[in-house]
Length: 338
Ligand SMILES: *Cc1c(COP(=O)(O)O)cnc(C)c1O
Ligand code: SF4
Image: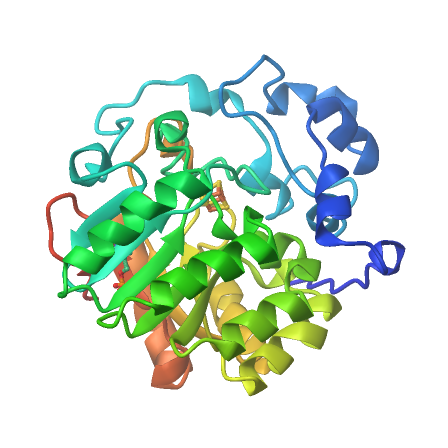
């Protein structure tokens, strides 16, 4: 296995917003930047898509030039398979449009509430179960936070608030500071969690300002990253994540098991090792949510269990993520046993 860990000198001194503004949005631009062989152009989809190509330059920089099979490229490149309708793959596999009790709130699990704090993401991952989510109806402005906060304040069984999205770190640090302050003012809330892929694709999102505001809060804070392949981690992550860990932020990672990307014990073991080097603990390894347009990423459940078994046999228990499936209507993510 070949792991490249590049520095991104050309992005040093740039803010995450400036980097985000340079995101690649067309297949043609991606092909040029990666020097991909255009005789294989049929490997991609170039029609206008409701869920378009979107990838920040810092993530493109970690892709292997000239390789159509690069595991990072595969996560974001639109392909023909997406257009096929496959039985069992729907637009709302998690039944979230039912549990979406109030604009911007998903309260499926006891004690934990998920706030949709931002509608967009820095990257469009082709396998994402949110590719059909009605974000437009869930667009939350600051004034709508009041409704969300009221919902949390009125239910004393809620002890943890999770910001999800979209990607909550698309919000500015000052907006996050304001939101966190109001959540911390609700006495029964004890824990605060952020689920974000933004610091993975743009490590510069781990700003000192954000760290300071999280550290200052009375709430115990966890940041759950979303890294699928060790090649996604760079020297920029190595500079920042250990500092966050030492500052008292709990760092976890969740991955999705993806065909021809990380469906290999060697890759998953290396991912756990690299994460731990950066003070991040593996948390969940999700099997794919059966969302329309993502069937070609699915790994058979028997193979998923075998891979998990290999992780158990090769890593200390604390570096083995829990293999889980999300089943609509269940009170928790369902563990899959090997
Ligand atoms: C995954 C998820 C959570 C968090 O679950 P944990 O097992 O606590 O990590 C909470 N709410 C929803 C809707 C989720 O999908
Ligand atoms: S929600 Fe996460 S997995 Fe889905 S597109 Fe956004 S960053 Fe990717």
